[in-house]
Structure formats: C-alpha cells, structure tokens
Length: 537
Image (cartoon, rainbow, N blue to C red; front, top):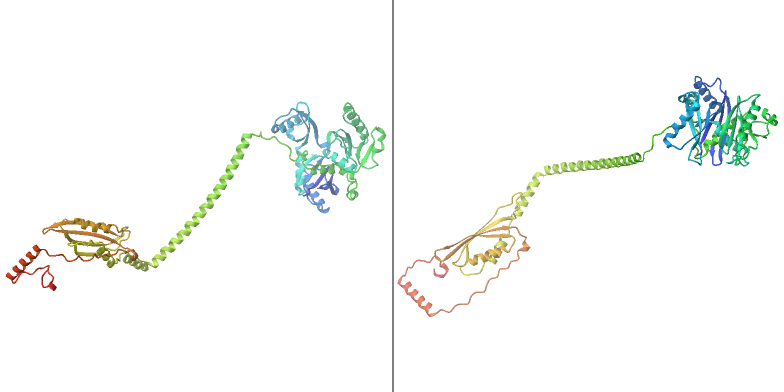
C-alpha cells in the first residue's frame, strides 16, 4: 500500500504545505500550497496557528496524513562526531554527551538525534552527524500538529532532503550524486538561503546565509573555503556547477561572474507541471519535496527529532533466553490451564448427565416397585424349582443294584433363595436305608456316583451296624437347579438270576420245616411275608 505524506516546511512566517505519495517509481507530489500564518509562530501562539492551519487545509481540501516537519539550518545545530566503537546501548548517551560539549547552553534544553555517516577503515571508529534543536521548538511543533488534527511522524532538518530534491530536479538526466562527486546546492528562502555541500548523498556541511545584498559575497567565501578544504582529495571530482533552486531573475544569477562556478537553475516540481503552475514560487518547495523522497525510500532511517534515539539497557543473552523460556512456559501453562478447564467442564457435564440418569432410574424403579417385587419373587421361585422326577430317576440309576441294599426313607425339600446368597444349592434330599453288614463300599459307591455330577453335593452323615448284621446309613444330598437337557443318566436294570438247584441239605431243612408247621397249626405270622403269597415269605 502506497504511503502518503504531508510535509510542512517552516520558512519564517510561511508554511509550505506539500502532499506526496510513495509509488514504485519514487515519490509523486499531488498538492502544493504556501500559507502565511497570521501571527508569529511561537510556543504561545502554536495552538491558535494550528487551528488556523486546520481551517486552511479544510478550505484547500487537503486530507490529513502523517506529517513530516522540515526545519531550516538556522534553527538546527549540526555537528560531525567521531568516536571509538562502543556497545550499541551506550552510543546514544555518548553522542548526547559529545554534542553537549559543543553547545553554549545545557544539553537538557535540547533534543538530540543522529545518523551514521560512515565507518572508518582504521580502528573501527564511528562517524555520525548529530543534530540538536531546542525543546521548546519541538514542543510548539507538537502543539501545532495536535491543534490542527494532524499526526506528527517526524521532525528533521530539510538539508537532509536536498540531495533527493536535486535528483528529482535533474531527472531524467543522470543523477549528479555520485559517490566521489562533490556538489553544491543553494536553496533561497524568505530571509535565509541555505548553502549545502554534498559528497554523493552524504551531507558534508551546510550554512545559513542571510538573503540580502551580502549573499553573493557569502557564497563566494564559503565556496572558496570548501574548495580549499577538499583540494588535497585526489579521489573526488567537482564541483562542476552551483545548483540553485529558483528562477532566472535572482541576484545571484545576475552576478554569476563573481565566482568561477556556473549556476544551474532547477525547479523541484518540474516532474509535476500542473502542481508547479498552482504555486507562485515552486523553488520554495525544494526542501519539502526532498524530505518526502527521503522518507519514501525503503529501509531508510533518517534523523528524527520527534522520536530521537535513546540509551537502551544492555542486551543480556541469558536474560533474553530466560525471557524466551519464561514466555514459552507461560504459553504452555495457559494452554494446559485451558485444556484442564475444558476437561473439567466435560467431566462436570458428564457428572450432571449421570446424575440426571440416576434420578430418572430411581424414579422408574420407585414407580415400578411392585412389579419389581413380583419379578424377584418369580425369579426366586424359578431358581428354587427342582424337577424331582428327574432327580429321583438319576438317584435310582446311580443306586447300586445289590441284594439287601435298599432305601427305607427319602425326604426332599426346597429351601428357596436368599438375596445375596451365592450358594446355588437350593434343595436337599435326606436319604436313609439299610445294607448288609460289611457292605460299606456300597454306600461309598453311591456317594461317589452322585459326587461326579456337579449339580448335587452328597454327604454321608452316618453309617451304623445294628444287631442282626444290618448296616444303617444316612446321607444328605444338596441339590441345585439343572437344565432338563442335562439329565442324561440312564437306568440299567440287570437281568433276573436263573433259578438255583436245591441241594439235598436244603431239601432236608425244607422237610423239617414242613413237619414243624404241621405240629404247630397256628404259627406266628411273619411280618415280612407277602400277604398275597399266603403269609409265606
């Protein structure tokens, strides 16, 4: 984006106002006007003059843009200084101290700034041009711009812009500002004329000469002194002429025979003929056009008394590194705090959601308490229901098929389930019976056969031998619920035994028994006999 400037050149009781715009081909002047302020420009009148300047710009339809304020040579102290190379943060203080030794007043009454001219090849010395202006002058310029509604960008001597004005004035000819060429430029004003000497673009010296009858003599004297000082420099050329901004009717032009340098008249606005025709004296805008060209150059850092260089603190690498790490840690901490806040908000939202879900579930359970109780009762009944026919079938299949080994009492019952009870055995069978004496293995065989099935848990409570060679046993069997498809035990009945042959001895005992029965016609009935077989066993 092109930069626009408003240059104010203060010339005694006039302000030369110039509007310029930076382009790719240099600076272009768009407006120019001279305004005589109604009263002397002093600190006490700066505010009133600023308001009057605002009205003038409004009448001329000049838009307010950043202001570059140009000062004449008569209001600025200039001095070249050389000093050994020192730390950058101490340079501004040293320049101010060296400048103060050249002034007749206290340095506290001045604003000081400087520009680097060149670095000497021997010893690495610094070479600067320092400029000082009174603080009250800077203050009244600031008051002027504030009252006029303008933004003050820079205060600088217009001598530093004369080189750029010279290049603009001779264009499209080759620039005379060659590195080893000396040039002399004269810019007349209302009361003062400024005579400046340049080597390339570097300002060597400048003088403010009274614009009057003695101007010619002052020019001759200063030219003679300058040529004498540079006569021993074999590596420089010129000056070939005296460049003067003005018209053909000046007193210097008519007296050009007084010195040997030819005079070349220049118009600083010759590239903008329409703008030049709108003003009475285009030569008065040479300094303003040069300052606009100077501040439009990329990378340029001209002397600026509105924002002078100041002493800065020494740069510590350790401190810079600490600041960098501290800033990085602060950024990391801020990011972590942000992430923690985000996670915390997510967790709070999750807790709120779960709380709402819990309240909804509790309400649902409360509303369906009776249905839940009925369901729990059904589950308890379902868990404690045992298919007793299948259980008795499996018990019969596992019972050893032996003579004299029988069951005379069996009791089965369910205990139901209890909340929190992890035991799956919900029913029990109490089994008692008889076995021949010495046949304890039959009881153990029955116990082992049932123990191989995981849904029953047998336990032999007692085995007792009674009189009459009878073994009584008692078992307790815990039973858990089992699916019907898992009852796969088969009952195998052994075939009947063939009839045994009666021996002679047995026949004798049988005959003896018949005789006893005949002798006793009313024998006691046998309690174990089968009544369907006539009371005989």
